[in-house]
Length: 380
Image (cartoon, rainbow, N blue to C red):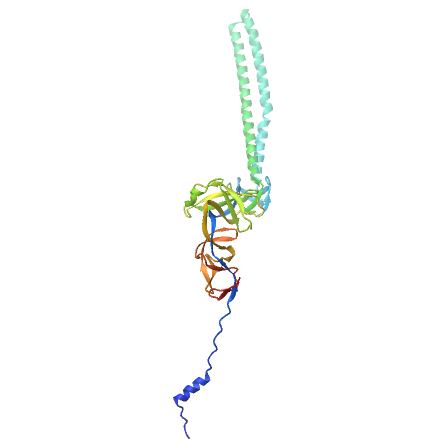
């Protein structure tokens, strides 16, 4: 049996013949995009500040009486009118107190006829004693009676006068007792009225703090209301800008929930500065708008000086991912994501504070599938 020997050259040829070279991948075709040149424009110097819409008048409705909650009539978001019943508390104990106070008042009033009768009787005794004393005086002058008899008549007159004074004092005491009983009835009725909580103004319920069955005590929050027809924007402004904001200054308010901007004026500046954020509040009255709601977020713009040169890009060209903002830039035929720091926004454009230079071309509108590093071809 013979052995076949393979030379190294033969092995090399066999290995080469069993593996074909892989075809080269063709580069992806460039994506056609539109670009916009970043150029400086003149913008009036302004200050932008974030803030929140608040009602001009709001009220936290609290309980003024102790009792279990029987009913809470409105729901969150319901509109209520001034004087409308909102919450009812259990008033059984207070009704019992009213009945007791009324019973004391009735008892005190029952003593009026007796007291008046006592005064009438005492007055009659006084008149009789005084008449007798006058007659005794005439007899004394005529020496028909002794001085002793006259003195006795005078003493009887004084006793009668004292009895009348005592009867009138008792009547006054009875009047005081009646007044106290009447005040007790009024106080009990006032306390009972606190078990029915009414709306102080026309507005909307924005919070419901209790439910039926809960025990309410004086000061317990029940509901929170906001008055209709009055809104303001509370802007948080850096303390370094305090000297640039004045009362009566106009401001443009842009809210995320309302497409068109609103115009208002600064009506109040809170003088204190919040220590954590180093900002102060400027309150701006807003015009009436059907879509305004408490809590809406937005930004206020204040004109603060002469025009300045700024770089801007279309607001829709900005890509927001979490806390980061970026734009796509066409750089030598390659799409590059460029992080930017933004400033004020106006009329569909937004100021770029850093990240771009004049002459850069941003991709706008951006194709949905365009990724960082993709080849692009700018077309008109």
